[in-house]
Image 1 (cartoon, one colour):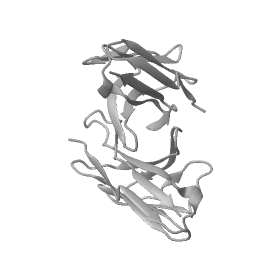
Image 2: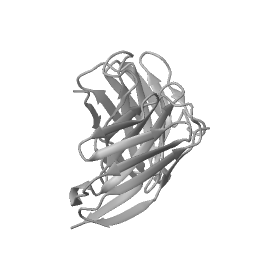
Image 3: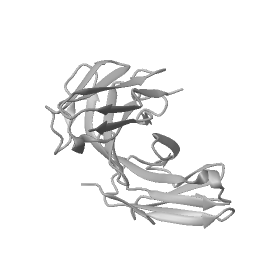
Image 4: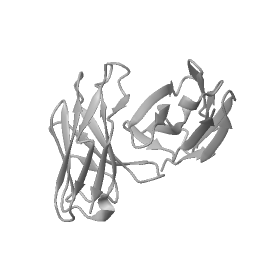
Length: 119
Length: 111
């Protein structure tokens, strides 16, 4: 149980285009989802926290107009990289958190990640 | 601001050796600490989670300890195998479910 999927697993796009990445909790409802970015040989950096039905909370230095996050349901959050540029190339990982009291409450379950390459 | 440091950054050992990976964090006000494994180009696999009230957790050949007051955790891997080769990440949860990750220790176990 507690499986999180991401789609696509990898994507290559041209500079200036927009890319949407989906994060789904397959067998549980996630009131909160998190989006991370990982550059080569670097740590995972939290980009934003997404709560179902409300606006995402972005970490300092993350452009909310560039990285659009939508958490439309308890099992789906999307990250759209708008007008992507080569410096946005990275590994994007989402995680989903179960409601408090269920399976440990504050455990984050991670997706397999999406490799974005912007040419 | 919470900072997590992992030492060493890379480690190469022959198969069969026991080894210790270290993690330290600057703010001891944490809810839990988690060790993950990450294979190249892949997502995270949770290995062990230690709640702030616990001192250690064990799973198979893995043992993780937590000394919250000193801001340290260790991951002990017994009888290492080539399949253990991966990057090991330490992460602490503080604030409202916010995870802060270290940069990881890249482990190579040679046959």
